[in-house]
Image (tube, rainbow, N blue to C red; front, side, top):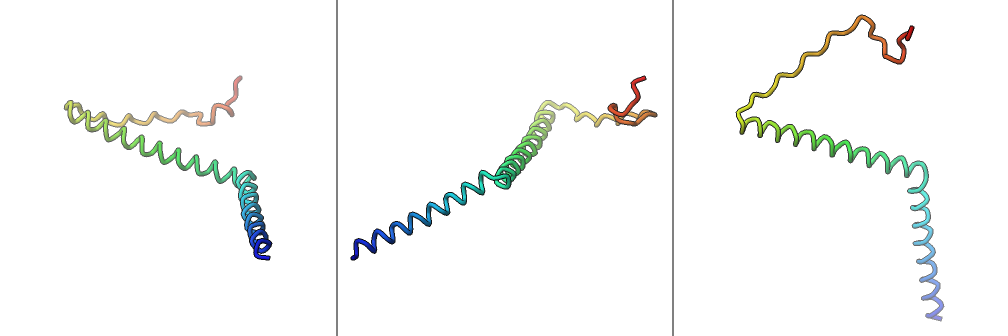
Length: 93
């Protein structure tokens, strides 16, 4: 009798774990899971590039200070053209 109860409890436990794993895998492989994974990757990539740019800028400033080189002024923005339409919308005639 105790053996049967043990195996019944073990079977129920294994069944519950299997159902939860299958439903978790289903949600991860569906469109929502894919969107969530892509969003996390793009956020991580954006954070990495921000950190890289700030570290590059800091290192460049350190090197310029060590070499005694002046920090270049920001380039002036070019004057806008008369035809400001995007290239894809301009007439090619």
